Image 1: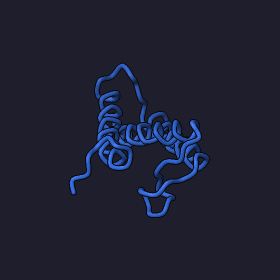
Image 2: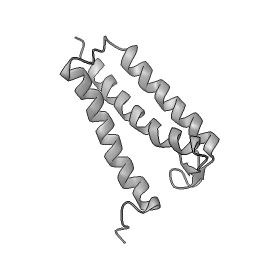
Image 3: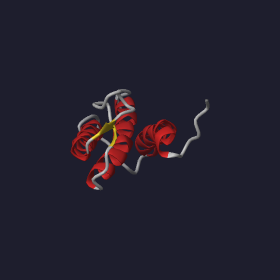
Image 4: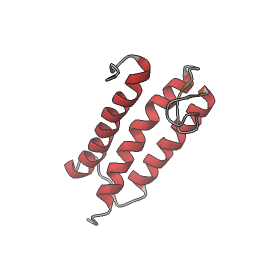
Length: 108
């Protein structure tokens, strides 16, 4: 299999994990941090912006998984690449957003 599909699957995991908090917060009608807020990544964006941003991330994940290479969920390497990307994004998001939502105490 071509080497480039594994970085693609890894990025897909990142986008898939990033889609979840934005889409869910938006569907719940809650404002949430997004790249479109001021200050970037710290300010809050509307629930509608978050639904759209979450859907965009999910679409990118889909494209990177199913339109690059031949993804097979039964292959450990394929599923592992997606899973590692999702895990990395989940840990980074927990640390970033935890500062604003009480899940990670401020170091200062």
